[in-house]
Structure formats: C-alpha cells, structure tokens
Length: 212
Image (cartoon, rainbow, N blue to C red; front, side, top):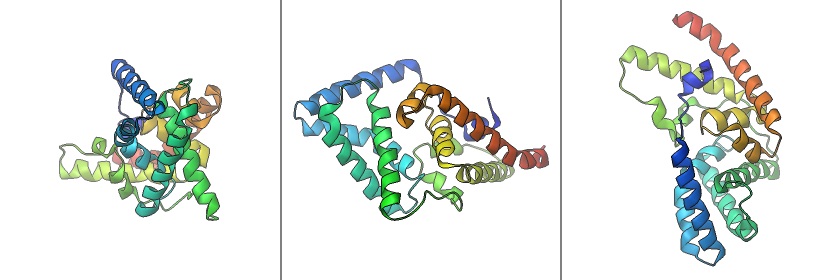
C-alpha cells in the first residue's frame, strides 16, 4: 500500500457488493426508462452523498455545490433514456457530475482551484468516517496533520491528476472505472495516478521523516 493510500485509508469494496449494487442500479434504471420517476428518486438518494463529495472537490461553496449536484442529476435523468448499460450506472453518473462541475466553473469564468483547500472540508466527504477512530490525543494530532498535508498536496495537483487520484483513493474506484469516468485509456489513468501519488508522497516525506 502506498503512503498516500495508507494516509487516506482507502475503502475496499467487496466484489459481491459491487455486483449487488450494479444489479440494483440496472433494475432502477430500467424502471426509470419505463417512466417510473420514483425509481430515479431512489438513485438520487443512493448516490447524492457521493456526488456531493465529488463535486465538492471542484466547487467549495456548499450552496453552489448543492446546485451543481442538482444540475448533474437533472442531466442524468434527461439522458437516462439513452443509457444502454455499456458502463456501470454510477461511473456514467460520475462522468456527468465531473463534466457538470467543470462546465459550472467555466461558465463563471473560474478555474478549478489548485490551492487553499480547507482540509476540514474532508469532514464533508461521504468517506469522512475513515478519518475518525479511537486514538490518543497525540495520534489524533498526528493523523490530522498528515491529513492536512495530503489534502493540501492533492489540492496543488493539476486537475486531471487530482481527479484520478481522488477517485482511486477516496472513492475506491478501479482503474477501469476511473477510465470510464474520465473518458480516457486505462494506461492514461495509471500514469496520472502514479504521477499524483509521486507528487503527494514528495510533499509527505518531510512530515513522515519528522514523525519517525
């Protein structure tokens, strides 16, 4: 396990859980395509925390993030009649969310921020529980400092590297799934994640040495 993954405590998704989720998604998508609006509500409830977390890596104002997430779900609903299941639903939805967030920033003449991310925003991630456990005050301080270093380093990454590594380390997605979300070859995904981890670990190294 890389230092980055260890610091973020990447969640592991079991294969049977992924299979069950995919089957449920396919069933709900089929119902939506037959005109069942309530089935789409269930998909929104299921994925809203993840989508808010993902968009929050681009749009840091909470009210704006909520608006962009709503727009992403509206786009997904309108596009669902054309969804054929060539990819998993949630990777298709993630791609829509990423593109919606990017378009939102462009429409307002704003670039994706590359610095000044408040590490405390990690508490808003649906994955934030992975940072919380029973520990001594000293361990909590060390953990919080390391978390700050990691998220600060991630914030400074070029956009494509940051997206790739966050989908891998925070969302636990496979390389195939990330390639689907980012609409690029899997080799490109591997290269981006390697470069991102290398850059983050360089920023972590002085802290790790000081803590040793």
